[in-house]
Length: 96
Image 1 (cartoon, rainbow, N blue to C red):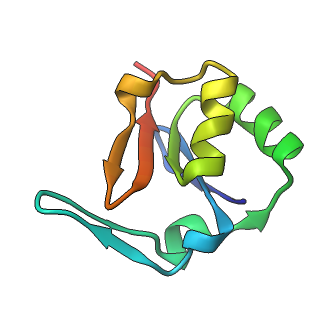
Image 2: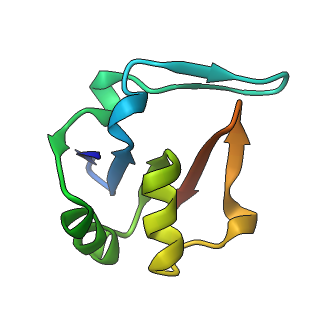
């Protein structure tokens, strides 16, 4: 999986994506999801490393079955917060 951390003045967003999805575009009748290298392709991490990063992140942008399954296992998100675009699961979690 790839992890890229985006920092702005007000927040930090951690983007995590299954490796096989980088560079692909998925769409359905309502939405489009583009998995750009610029946004998602940062450092390649193991499942254990991804788990630790997810536990400590406040804002997450997650794409792909492996990535989503880790977040579900850690109870960071629930199935009803996941959207699927052309069979690709995607979820966003933001600190309120």
